[in-house]
Length: 426
Image 1: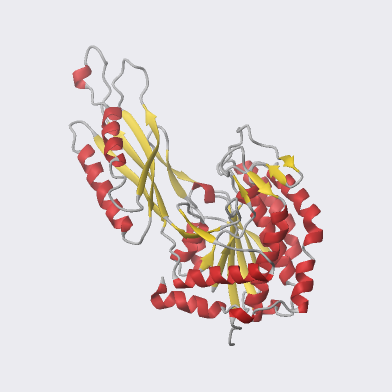
Image 2: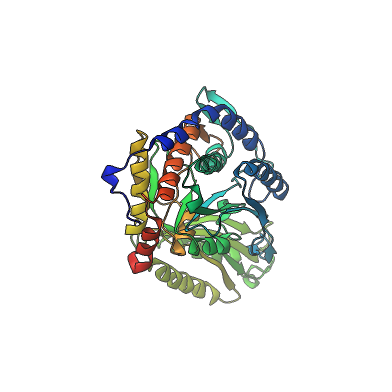
C-alpha cells in the first residue's frame, strides 16, 4: 500500500462523522475522571491499585476486547536497614484486540500515581469550569480515558479490522517500571508503532527526545562504637557516604547532558554512637547512547574508593532502567503524523526535548517507534497542584482518533515506519 502524501491528507466524510461523536461524551468523561482521581493508586498502595484496576477493567468492557490481569516480574528493593528484599508488584491490566490484524499497535499508560495512601492530596476539586485539580487527573488517568475513547471511536471505521492492538496499563511507571519493563519490551518488539498517553506540557506541546534514566542505592557498612569512649574504634558509615555524595555531585558538568542527583540518605541513630550503616539513593540521567558506559565506570570507581577504606564496605545496587529516546527519523515520522493529524483538527502540535522518562523509552529500546505524550493537557504533575484542562479530554481523544484512523487506512504507513527503525535509524 502506498501512503498518501501528507500534503494531500484530508478527513473523509466518515472520519469527520466519527470525530464528531467525541464531544458529546465530555460530561461522562469528566465524571469518570473524577471517580478515578478519588481512588488512591499510589505505586506502593496494593489495595488501592487493585481497586483502580477493577475500575479500569469495568470501563474497558466498552472496547469489546480481551482484558486480563498481567502478572509482572519481581523486583528488588533496598530497605532503610540496608537489606535487599524481593518485591512483588501489582498486576498490569492488558487489553488485546485483533492480534492477527496486519497492522499491530502497542498503547501504554500507567494507573499508579506518586501519591501515597496517607498523602493529604486525595480528592479532586474544580478550580474553574474547565480546570480540575486532583491526583492523577493529568498523570495519567486522564490519558487513559483519552486512549480508550479513541480506541472505541476506531471501531466505527470500515478500516478498523486492519488494526490490532495491545494495551498495557502498568502499576509501576512512577517508580521506573521495574516490574513492567520486560513486558513493555515484549510488546514493543511485536508492534509496528507505539502510542503512550503521558500528559502533554501545560502549553500543549509534546515531549520529543527524552533522556535515559537509572536508579541506584549504595549500601555502606561501617562499625558502631561509643562516640566518646571508643570513637577511634568506630568506622563512620555516614562520613563515608558524605564523601561518596560529594564526589558523585562533582560528576555533574563533566559530560554534556548527564546529571547525578542524590535523593535520600538513610542511616545513623543516637548522636553518641558512631553510625555503622548508611544507604544513599540517587538517580542518573543520560542524553545519548554511550553515556551509560561512562556513568557505570565512574560509579564503579567511586564505590571502589569507598570500599577500600579501613573497616568500610560499600555495595552498589541498581542500574539503568530506561535508555535515551532520541528524535530519530523513525520517531520523527510518528511525531509528524501527530502534527498532521492535529492540523486536520485545527490543533497546532509542537514538541520540545524532555529530561523526563516514560514507557516510550522502553518501547524505543525494543525498536518500536513511538510518540509518548498523547494524553491530556495539564501541569504541576507530581505535586498537590496537579491539574487538567477538561476540554483536552475531548481534543486529545479526537487527535488520537485521527491518528488511528489514518493508520488503519494506510495513509500513515506503520510498516514502513517500523522498517525505518529496524534499518539502524535508531
